[in-house]
Image (cartoon, rainbow, N blue to C red; front, side, top):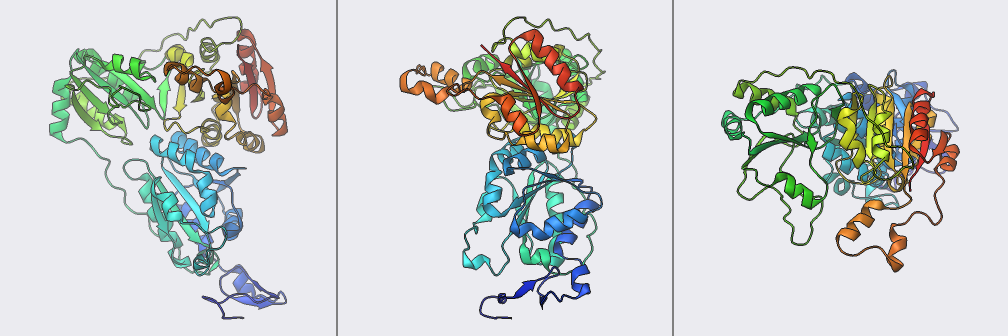
Length: 546
């Protein structure tokens, strides 16, 4: 064994065997070394002991021992993805539907960097996330090898980093990350496991589970002030991580009692349909957003911070609430709104009752599919109990308008605005709730950021029906250009067009192993969605729009 570098390096003809620094020549390795537990085993055992059941993975060389440990794990399902952004988006969707974290497994800093767009979305969703990054051996980091990066800088803006110093520490590090991700507001924890900590032997066992902290709650003064401010000139602005049927019933009871408005911001997980109270949603564009909030004397934020415009616009305030509007926050971003709403109802002396079930009645438009018609047509075809993933800003607006009259379902929106979250989220949701059909209303442009999701859907035989809104353009960008007085003409036109050449989504689906069909009118779309829901495994519908 050479000792020319830090901690030694391997000579030609020798090989490293599983179990740490032990080396053998000629294939002669001790059975004890081969059979010993290592840091990777301890980490995965700890994750299983914590109730983590699923790992969405795109591993590489520094994760070899983790791959081996996952392959022998007794209760961990490993889902392979072709791109790291699919793994992070799937872990986000899984967390939102299950309420518990999955593992996302990534290869060094560059692999993790590929996942960052959906890490950003997950942070906006307050999803409990645990990333696992395999790193170079501790002594190889200083060599600045080609794949070396400053992982801590990549992780800093998406969550908290937990570095593993040795194999014996792997269980404790995973425990700390789990506690961070699941305590209080949902948040992201990232475990870095150097390769030598993964392969070195350990006799340590998974540590005892750490006690969770109490969920945050508003202080009495804030609660009392918020209750006193509610009137017919005030509003409760609710959203954030989730709004349950109980939360919506509480909002309805409080509104009936006080006369206040209820306005929903986009919510990471929203129960919607004819069995829950329905409320108006805050508009996307700044002018109608400002109009919806004008005249308010008080606003009570629940599950979110004060509304802001999606972008900064000329001569437009970033904060559309009136300047003299009194602001109260009784549950912040990531906080569960339901406990705060229970306290607010108690403060007001209000009792909430479940919303009476209404008949699901949507009269969908007929004829060719357009930006105005495709949303209502889609909503009319949603089966009861479905999970809907919405990543179609322009084409999906009509769906959201009529969704309260659709069959009861769960809506997962993409709050962070980073493109490419919809299809991976559908993967994660389908893994989390395999007994419920998953429908993805997906813009064509944004689908292509993570189109590899289709392969994972096929590989795992997931019950996902994807409706591609094929308007063959970046419609939202064209709309923003029009609003700014710069319609996309001349050389600008190709920058918002996806029709030269037109993308054949059915051929893409076939290539990834997913059954598909193409439709161009309302009646055909409704029938196609029914076929997709009834089919075993994933199904893609290319909805051609005029």
